[in-house]
Amino acid sequence: MDITTVLVSAVVGAVTSAITAYFTSKLKVSEEREKWSRDLSQKYAEALQTNPAVAANLAKQFAIALLIANEPQPSKEGRQKIFVLPNSRLVVGRGPESDIVVIDARVSRRHAAFSTDGAHIFIESMGSRESIFVNGDFALGRVLLHNGDTVSMGETSFEVLMLS
Image: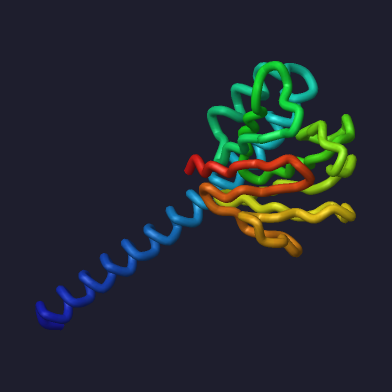
């Protein structure tokens, strides 16, 4: 074997090792991100049941979006501000079982749901007879929302602010 063959073999081996290490680390980061997201969702659900103050703090720290509600009858505290976590689902409606309760006669007890994946937020109807609109356009099915979008249902609207 001459020196050129040895050098080429060494370079090919080093490049192959580097590529393998790169893809292995990317896979581990992806797996860790999924585990972290599942753990956050579980801790948030537990905190909602046992300590709402801790749940609110988690939501503020890890939210991917903020919803600002404009209701026909706002509460004494003013407009609702709802932090939306990754991989979550928040039901909007008049019913006390809803995650976001609104006082609006034109909104059903379980009217719509905001849902998220790791980085995006969506709105979808829960089968209400009343419609949902995004920026004034009729929303059909599950609709991807963007920063600054306005979601309207009944006389209530939500401004979407993306945080990440």
